[in-house]
Length: 231
Picture (tube, rainbow, N blue to C red):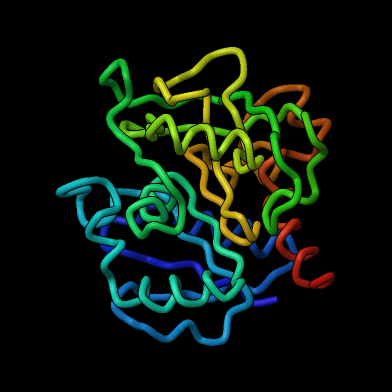
């Protein structure tokens, strides 16, 4: 399975995402922000970083890149798309997911191993988890506070579109402890934590729970393989 990984100016985690794809048994395909061609990939990852220096708003300029025009069309047609950290911000700016992401409530960059609760397993990127499962995924951001209108929050809660919530501590002031979302089709998922940094022993959360689970981040990438096989 061919998984495209997009590189924007300022992207930092594209190589990590490609490694995660390989470890899950897929073939990573490099996609360039200025190229509309998706090269016949089966899914797309928008990785973390600081696209275009986070000018205007995080992800705002990247959402207007030529590659995003193709990704938006493909996502609306059912192509699996995962947005990680800055990629989540891009998905929101591109209106593929609702709401917004703003400066952390405490106004500081945060880097920690973060406990999450899996809230939805009916997506291309979460079907290898179990509902209510607690996982540990690295988190690193300065603008990770999720916000939305009250009406939008009611829709997210009522329609089961929240994929992950922060557990034990809310690190950035996100409304309703939201760490990740899905679209209604289940093919688009965005989250602030970095699953690509928790895919192999010795290079992720150094906890007994994470080691026993085989490192929780890998399930994101095996999930999309399973989704496509059973599509």
